[in-house]
Length: 486
Ligand code: SF4
View 1 (spheres, protein in one colour):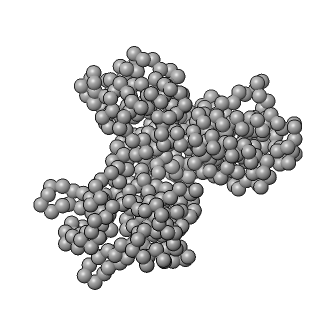
View 2 (cartoon, protein in one colour):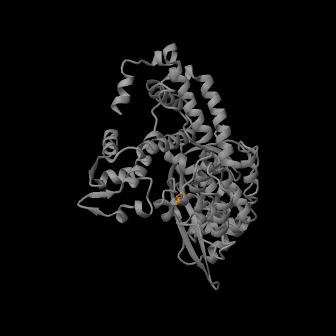
View 3 (tube, protein in one colour):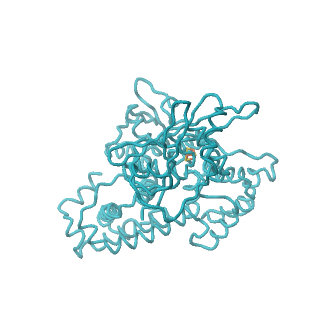
């Protein structure tokens, strides 16, 4: 905003980083990042406790420090916290001021008529690019002469998305920032990666005992298979955010559909600031069918998008229509090895009819195979990796990644096989190498992210000679694993 920008006039980077005069702004910057990274919310008192100029400068410094961390997951996480915070402020504005603020931000141009807001459909498509389902789809929103009409609530939700997207992109930080904040960045990174891993990967170790107990009760539920909508809402819940009703309904029905005990689900909500035991128990037991006799099913993606529960789809989300399908697809690696291999071959052969003979020939050629590889495998270029029969570590770019759902009927069996697959191409030294389709999306998601960010990724690959027909056998890589960047 221009008023905020004017605070930056005449401030140079050196003094911002070193001058005693800006010490408070620097402290607010770190505080902003720490609360955001550890709790998913930005806790910052406004004036008179903190000076407005310090808050604005603190924000700028926090962006610089964040850029210097070079950690996209953290950047996205803070972007979401900032966007939630901005949404709260936008909600408290009058309609007229809301229009002025939105237009000043310069991403979309909004007009107000009565209590309706409108914008050009091109602006809308750009702003809603991550909100692709249900009512967010342009076709479902209704376009009249190129104009899309929105109510106040929808506009504010859309702006949360615009702000989040904007904040997810950061220019490279000046060198001075890395130098000046080296210690802080390292602290922040380790603190953040610890909290982040705990939250995303193992919520049962998160901060308070009560939360840890609540998660433990979820027993066999595997968080690493859950879709972004579930993980993010759960993170908010764990961070003490009061979730809106659609989010609570979703968490309850999603867990109930996966046979989680209503009592355990109920205790999850005990971490919410507005927790009322009797009321929550009634709601959870009713929704999960314990008292009502009707088990409500988990909403579809369309519904979750239009009710604001979906934080935006990832690459796997784009192939499914229901969060439970996401959980099911992510369980691919739990299937028996022969079944996994058969599904990979089916996905590669991609025939309309079930290719019984071809499948048998390929399976016979491959023989017993398990997806485990030796820790001490060699690092090779892709061209060398293609010449050996064993697994290799490779560092590659992803040239192509495309998800698709494939289905085929099994003859004499009233059963259809559904496979959510991704075709991909690796590139190394300017040459492209074809791969067998990926069916394990725990590997597929980081690969797609590397392609999206045009970043190299370390993989474990093994080549296989696949028979496509009498005259065609091709040597393709099977991606066995994604290695940590470290
Ligand atoms: S697209 Fe569906 S599964 Fe993915 S985050 Fe959104 S609601 Fe969840």
